[in-house]
Amino acid sequence: MAHVERPQHPDISNDMFDKIDEIIAVNRPRPGSIITALRECQDMAGYLPVELIDYISHGMNIAPSEVFGIASFYALFSMEPKGRHTIKMCLGTACYVKGVKQIMSRIHLEYGIGDSETTEDRRFSLEAVRCLGACGLAPVMIVDKDTYGALSSDRAVEILEKYE
Image (cartoon, rainbow, N blue to C red):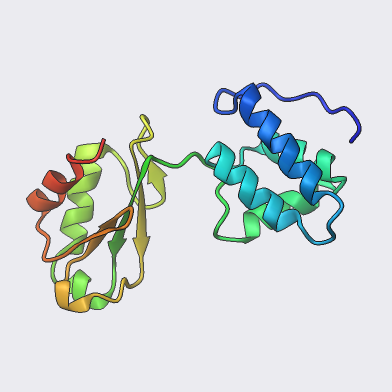
């Protein structure tokens, strides 16, 4: 790989860049492996800042615009930092009717985040989803892999306070 200066980025240490270099080296000779490389690098850094996308594109010898296009097209990639915990709030009909909007408003009030946002301290990321398939438990919230149903605004905040 031609020497490319490692960008300075507060979220990516030199040790992380060493591992990213390994990911690039393994995937560079494999045609069509850019998605795999991006996924593995995102797993390493937590997200794909523009500086990292440029670094990967040079390392993989792929045009930065092509790599950016891939990273921005697929929902599994994030170019914004994510929280340590992901909150998924169901906006399906049953949850909507049973008050999920009030719960979302309370989360916004308590943590200062809305849909697709992350708290400044990166504790939480909030995602509104169309349906979680648990209509009998409405309104429903998933935090990481834990499912909570029959929520009220107070109960949602009590649950979230358990996550550091």
